[in-house]
Image 1: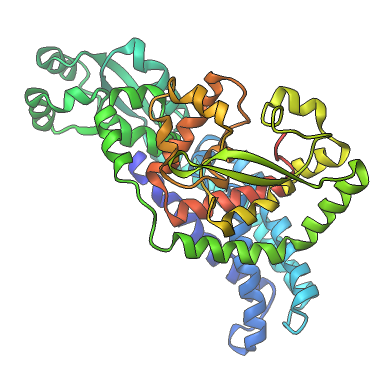
Image 2: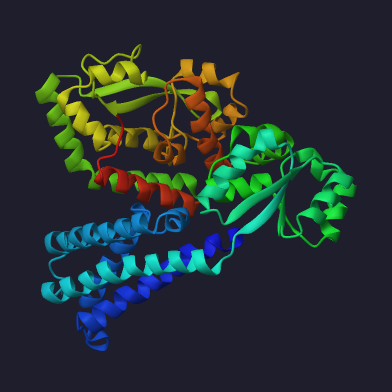
Length: 436
């Protein structure tokens, strides 16, 4: 089951592509071969917006599909509706020379709204019926690892079940393998077990699938739990030491900042006017934050609180009571982050990365959270994996949980993950699920 997770997303993308173009040609009755270049461009633009919309509404999230077919179907239908309206609006306002027949287009998109959610429901049912539950033996302490194993099992709709736990001992392992003959895989939870040649030889001879906990937990939960970091310190130390800037990173962020500055200019103007009308000047808030390599820089945001000051800003418990009327809306839409495009242009930040924290929070976490300093191996971002996956933090325990997502991103950063985060952020803004 786990090995097929990555194929689900690409299969859905392929099916959606076929459904969209088939709907345009057969339901919308557009003759593909008689399309003008303008017509093709119009429908091609709408297709691109649709796919991006599905990404932002988690239409391609494998875990959401497996765990809740109803949620996946609702998200998909919502994505098609919002993307269709947005795309048509863009074509009508900015690309009027594109050829688009409204009634035919509505029929095509209506078909997509029906077939795409049904397709996801069918795939979810197929997975539940065809893929049997895989049983695994966990080599490690049950008291330490059982909660994490159950969490992974639940994330996969109980398709991956821990049926036994045994200590890292050859005799006990052989006995466990014999008693639990139905088990199809073994999970190695401790780094020291990998160095035990006798145990590894026993597992290889048994012809059983071997899962290493770091690989397994990152693939399923998309974060690196603290207990896994602690058990695989050497492995993660090497991983984080190898982190370096990507070749096109700076060019990508500069281009993105330039494009977004133009697109978001009307929203920035509206936010600035709302702040000035509601609470007067200043409209911008400045504060020192910790960036790459632990260096400090000045971050820029639209002011959302009355008489904002550096001493109080950043404490969620105090921030909520000091939000202005305009500030509440601006935060909900995440428009307060727009001025950080200045930080991207200056080279302080990236579009995607860990949240830049104020110095006192960094000092609080550095000595208490394993590998916390490795967040600073890359530039902080306006949005990030932890920002879209976890809530705002106010104490050490919640900072630990949020750091699990940050470290996952630092270790696994790539263009596709960046795109996923950006699209999820767009979905958050559209759904007004922004900051408190």
